[in-house]
Length: 95
Image (cartoon, rainbow, N blue to C red):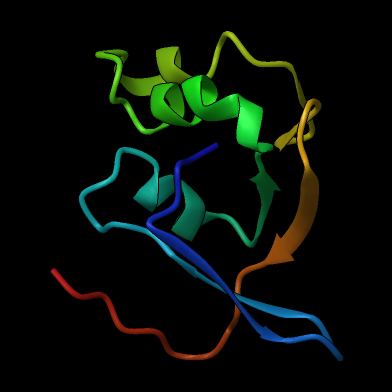
C-alpha cells in the first residue's frame, strides 16, 4: 500500500517492473522488509484516490488507505494489477 514514486515496465517477457519508492516514504521500510508486494494501477477517474494515497489530502500513515477495498495488498477497484517479488539483486538507495 503505497503511492510509488515511479513504476516502469522493463521487459514484457519475462515481465519485469522497476518500482521506485521514496526512501523517506512511510511505507519504504515495510516494502523492503517483505519479499512480496503489489502494484495497482488506477483508472483516470480515480484521481481523488491517487491524491489520498499520496497523502496530498492531509491524510497520514495507514489512514490514507482505509477508505479503499483491498484483497491481499491489491486494490479491488483498479485498472490493472501486478503481484511482485522484490529482487534479490543488489539495489541502491538514494537519499
